[in-house]
Image (cartoon, rainbow, N blue to C red; front, side):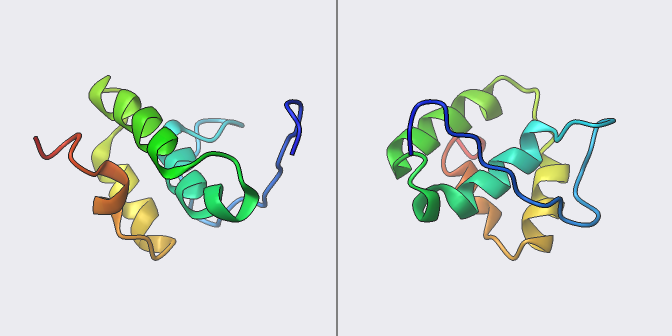
Length: 85
């Protein structure tokens, strides 16, 4: 994929939404699922980005957990050590 690549995916029913925009917690879960398949970023880059978002305090953890469970993702793999430590 090139630098100007845009990936569009259908919305998951009951996914968190803020008006017409997908909030960060839903993007984190969906990106976690798609990053390897689409070659968007490696695991370390994802964890650095996720860590910065989680440590900012702007991602509601409860909503992230609910969305991860609906997508059948182990949410602990997304939050890694950023929330636990």
